[in-house]
Image (cartoon, rainbow, N blue to C red; front, side, top):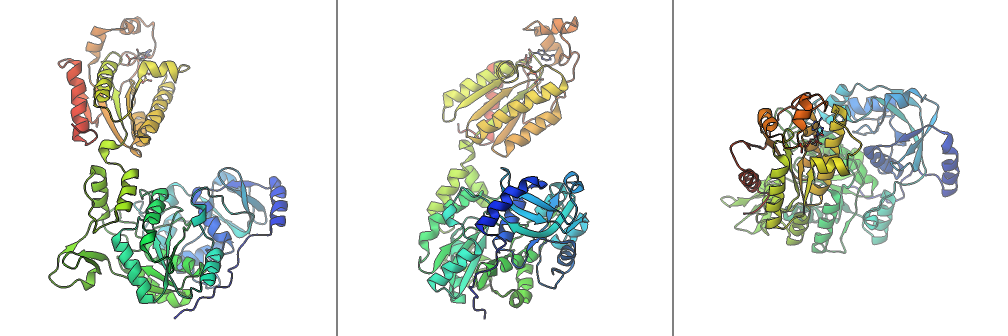
Length: 568
Ligand code: PPS
């Protein structure tokens, strides 16, 4: 059994006076602008969350951690906390030199006294730390595609904490939590790590854990960086706040942890244990598939769902924290109660809703039963992930000049305005060129800039719940794809190819431009003297040669209905 040592943990900050002096002097030092993940790591280094680390790992510590989960002096530490930088920056820095570490706004947070500079073998790091050099693993993907090629290591001199503007009162350093536990007389505290909203299964699990460990409970969610695609931390914290009153206030607290998770499964569980011990906890809950990254590129789980519990068990004493392990919790209908899956009474009906199923129900606006979650949590989730019929989207027409894009787009706009419910904006080719892109011509470079501007405006409209209708020529596949990617993180993107042939466009020649193009009076004219790459995977292709405008617009409406974006 572990009794807490609630004495303050060493931090890496200098006094206020020294910090002011260092800030002044740091102007002369080379400056590194920290990435979002590095800011998270630095915060936990400086406040003692990663104790006993005193800085970003040196090469010897890195090798020990990667190979054996141990620092050079033998201390257990399973995740390498590295400072990755670009080759260009590294070229100007040598061991023995100090560098200033700044946040994205240029505020100096710390000084790194560089002792080591080396080039890691990233594939090896991935194999050892994450179990596979497989880009389907978010941290491996990060390692190869976002992390710089050179690592700098050495001790940190902390100047100031990273600034947070959100949920200030809910964030605590390890020493603030230790002081709170001391003040409350909490000698046994079990931590619940999470990156998801709390549903009833989690509540039951935390209740049981607190009972089993005869301990107080801290809900300790991660708000730094979690798995890409997770529900954003703003929504999650509002969800946690909504259920906090379901817990006994005298024995439960909640605090936010600005950790950048790696999703490293078993190794990550140990790391979480070390971090919780540093925050003054005596116990930690390790459930099914702790910090699991999901499936690998072969469609198999990266880690066995209970591997984290196995590894934790063998290192708990060394870390100085006890594990409270749980099997998956499921709802037993006859008992109207949650049970660990291995304790379900025989012959009973087990109910469960997976994460994927929950997302589907939210997307389609379907019922989420009370046995699964709390109405306040569901309401919060629905506010952030409204049903598709309430989300913004973009309809992107592409086709030759004179193909009929603008006419169909106008008809579509009117039809959508008749339905009401969402604001509609038409970004027509001509209008955009007048208001957004008046300085641009028709070279490939200028056309790409034009389309990306349209994409940016459409993505903002989509993000804010509106409907954007775009109608440029957009002749290049790669640029259309880039716009699609920009928009799909906020809502649906419907590419409509207005497939009027060049012959028909030229025959119509509404603006007389084809004639001028043929005479060479307009250069780089799409379809005549400039390329048009027809879409291969458009959501819809409309034929204006045999179908009238009204019907073309109606085909788009039917497509939107089929995709669940509008209700008939
Ligand atoms: S692009 O490629 O998407 O940036 O083009 P876009 O902004 O949609 O073009 C809008 C209108 O510009 C007129 N125009 C030309 N089109 C193609 N090539 C050349 N060289 C050119 N010069 C002027 C043309 O009328 C386009 O209007 P639409 O609405 O497509 O008929």
